Image (cartoon, rainbow, N blue to C red; front, top):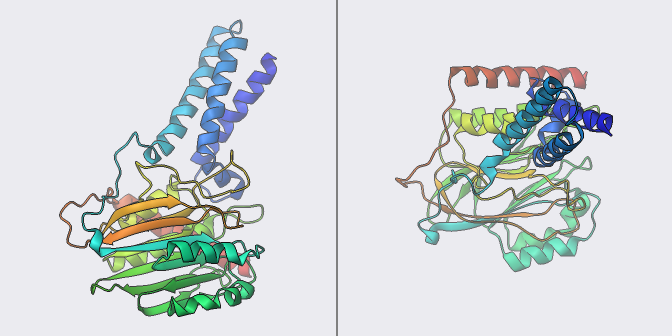
Length: 354
């Protein structure tokens, strides 16, 4: 049994150390996701080692336990910001008279239970809706919503990367961008609020890490959006299925670089994927925004037939707030890192398209 314990613990130490490598290789970056699960396995491995390795060489036992403890603390340090043990970075709303709501939902292209989503929209009545993965069939099924949402940007695709933005509010300068890859779109628009306020909206859905697909392009798309925000600062909201977790280095770098907050910090994980695997759920659907907004409510909603849970966020537009709680700013080294990652991602995208 002791060899089983040693093997098990060694694997936990290995998968804990792999994400420390600076690379976009998919089989390494995929271990950014299960921090909670690996932390639990670290605890299990420690308990087994304490019981079954008591008679082993004292030096080996000490080193083995130290590595497991270090692995546990490493994972906890990544995820603790998404628990009530730390203070939220996103401020609470102080003027709900300026609030609006946003529904973010990955519809799952193969899912044809259109009525579940339409019923959810009817019951919740959001002001803005961002849908990822819609194809032409989904677009046609939701055409009736255009009456309630007269301002739209639609880019249906059959490759699971289609996007739809529906809005009750006017949209200025709306456009579909292909920032990195020519088959993966993103959406930009300036949202005009009824009270005269305006903010930039970015809808994104980059490619996930998977066999044959590394994360260079995913990271590059997010950081390009970050550069646009930094070059033109102002009220901004970024939403979508990022196929990344909020505690990853790329997500953290993006938020620090663009000075956006994550409303989940200090409040909870809000794991949206996968509906079908309760023990393997991660927060892949995100809403980040500048400190010009106050949080009214954030929720994970009931499933709609997709493999993702929808996300619901209510915000209040408060650009004149004096209680700013900004994330730490980036230094010159991090700025250089952003440029390096963008350049690397563009190179990888060009090579894969040739």
